[in-house]
Image (cartoon, rainbow, N blue to C red; front, side, top):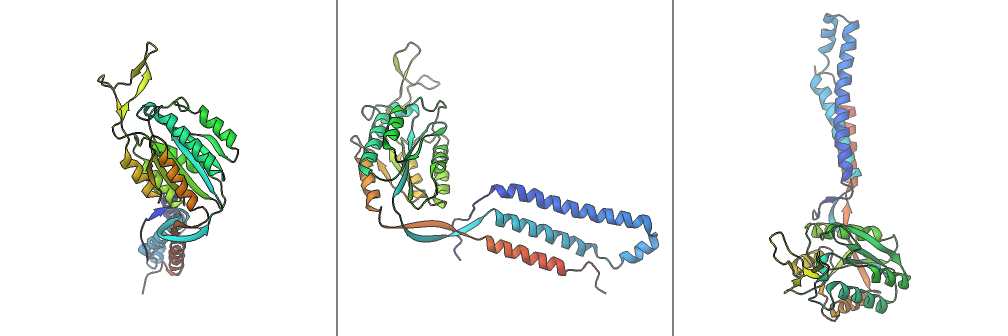
Length: 334
């Protein structure tokens, strides 16, 4: 049996089941105590001692523990345990593409002309014009993420939203790749189309959760392609100073902040979902190469890798414990 990539599809269920199992055990113990107290009020101590010689507290405790263990196993089954990888082959009709665009202040760096953000936006527009089919959507992110344009085939509406998107789109500062990918996941709808996320950023993941979030998307069959916007030499972030004139963004010590392309993070994010990493390039050639690669696989067989459901194993184990509990007597062996 393949035990690779163990995880739970609904881990939050365990937070409900564990307290419930403890509550069940407490109620069973409380009920046994109440029964013993009620019996003591109607039966003499001598008769109670004589009748208790046939009852085994250890066996009664074992029955209660079996019931609690069965409840826990059912809870794990409801949480959706997965391990192993199941590969299914299907033919995609088209692609639904959600572009995830970094709008943090580091995208104002001019190591790409006229700026990283403007170069990324023009590359997205060229991609959509040449793609020509399928639905497209747009997520903007910095320290928070927001769906700017839901999936649509109205490309004019998409272009209007793209043109209006700038560093003021998300007021929360920072760069959080995990939130951006989670927002992109929520933008997709259920259909047979291949679902792609194209992340355009300089790769500075200040919250350091992007790779883990990409792994969660991979388990749901989503592919994330990453596009590095910027250069390795980088450049200074220019902002409007208090006097209204452009000035370099400075840290707490007064030094100008330099933003560089982080290709390592973007490569890991793409690899976690079976996607590709490309560098955008001054003329957007990386985005065009990515479009051609995606287009070449539009009508081809598409391998979908998903975790294998294992709920039946835990449900069977829970049923077995219930059967054992029903057969276990509380009377002592003579």
